Length: 272
Ligand SMILES: Nc1ncnc2c1ncn2[C@@H]1O[C@H](COP(=O)(O)OP(=O)(O)OP(=O)(O)O)[C@@H](O)[C@H]1O
Image (tube, rainbow, N blue to C red; front, top):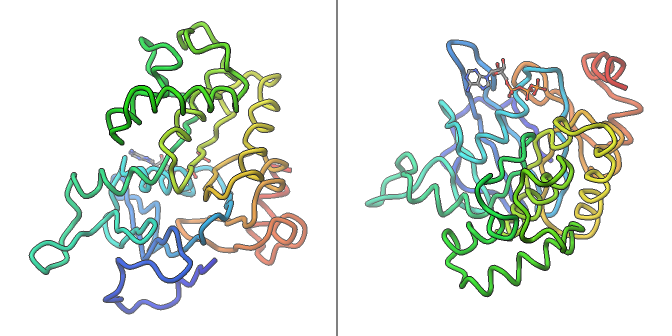
């Protein structure tokens, strides 16, 4: 992973991903109400890598995932996913801020699982999963249903197709949310504190499922979690954030046992 934040020169190629990069943040800055949350953030993630973002509360981890989902837009800088810019597009030979249509296309490559499941409460489980593949990807209802049933089997809920979300436990709802994200066959799966809203006895089952997905697929994963054991198990790389920047990044064994940065040591001693 490249975390080079040192070079302040504008880069004409800022919207193009380099070789072997699936995600690229290039000098991304984001402020809320005058507070700078991300400060010229630069990093890239290679295809298939599982990367965990760690750092103190408020350091901007969730904001990074929300930027990728275009739930918020950066103030400056560029974000590229699988070679396509989420922030810019070329129109009439000129590079301009990305429009809604362009953004919608690029966003198809990204799936996200949220802390609060975010299922459609008025739709049965199967329809929760088929809805986007039919309406966003244009799959036939039969194709979408076949895909949904396979995924429900994968997440251990093959018998819950006809249930409504309210009839499921939190852990089961989160499994449906995972299946729903995977049904779009995204290149990137974003996981935002996916077990934080679960009763403690349901956490292990969801983490085991995600471990299986992490180890068994080549999907690129970007994960925000306070579950450090899980982070250690699934991650190829861990990025430590502080004050809107990556202050340290490396393999989990290095970051968790022998970090270079004092802030990382302080953070880990508080959470481990
Ligand atoms: N939509 C928003 N409007 C205003 N402020 C926001 C918004 N989103 C995030 N923030 C602020 O930006 C900062 C970073 O938030 P973010 O959720 O990215 O941090 P985090 O590192 O994920 O924290 P945590 O570990 O507590 O979830 C926080 O101070 C937060 O209050």
